[in-house]
Image 1 (cartoon, one colour):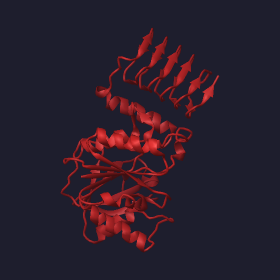
Image 2 (cartoon, rainbow, N blue to C red):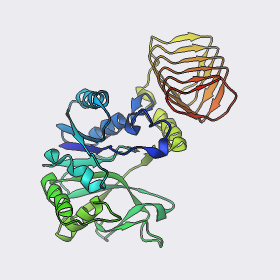
Image 3 (cartoon, rainbow, N blue to C red):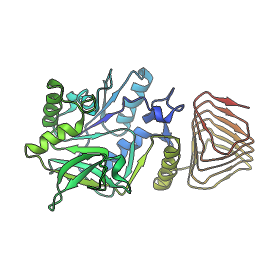
Image 4 (spheres, one colour):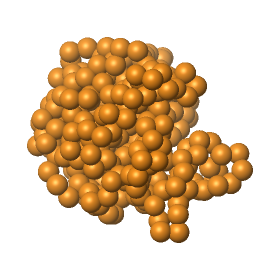
Amino acid sequence: MNIIIPMAGRGTRLRPHTLVTPKPLVNIAGKPIVEWLVKDLIAICPEKVENIGFIIGDFGTAVEQQLLAIADSLGAKGHIFHQEVALGTAHAILCAKDLLQGKTIVAFADTLFRCNQTIDTTKDGVIFVQKVADPKAFGVVKLSSDGYITDFVEKPQTFVSDLAIIGIYYFKDGAYLNSELQYLIDNEIKEKGEYQLTNAMENMKNKGSQFFPGEMQEWLDCGNKQATVYTNQRMLNIKKDELQIPATINNVNSIIIQPCFIGESVILENAVIGPNVSIGNNSVIKNSIINNSLIQNNTHITNKVLNEAMVGMFVKLNADAESWSLGDYSSSN
């Protein structure tokens, strides 16, 4: 089994947090978004994952090494592929064509999830979906009476289905997907100026492939600050049994209300932390009350009450406010 993770996007909706750090490497509940994604994908795979391919932009050597280390920590071989120009989802996946063989999962890196079932690898394909209240903003699938997918409908303005496509796909035959993606490129088949995965799947369906829905219990987005803070809250609750307070923290007259993630070498002094707070490594929190917030590494916060805040790396914050979204290397006094 191979996993392919397209993640070359610029993450503009999450700025300023993505000006320095690519969005999939922003920490949520103590791990990068992409690490949680791959870890949870492996958990629903009935077979061993041999290879993980990360499709990135010009993120630099340090990011590439971090991604390879994530794959290695999960027992797979990591591969780096580059998408120089954003030409659509089909083009992005095809950048990792060396891994498009055999059983393949494609998962876009801004999606986290909770799922209680393993992938049925006997199916031609599985497209993971989530019921949504307003399907107009999503691509959705229509189902036959036998439960397989009959149509892909992009942002329907009249109701056809409430099963939104969340960006995680399983294909039994990666080589077949490769050929259909290449067909789009060779024949300049585009939607809104880009090569789209749904067009390739439509061709495969018309040729006899049967795709089935895989329904998630929960779908978590990291598209903007509000969504990311909420996702941090949910991941802390979902993964609370995996979170432990490290022995390296320096706790001086402070209270931690679980669930929380506290990183290595954190200093807490006269603080109340939690619930639903993540604090990155080497951060210092003094004389402050913080709840339902996401604080990255090496950040200093003094004399603050923060709620629903998202604060980046190497930030110095000492000013009056309730809700902040500060990117890396910011300072406020």
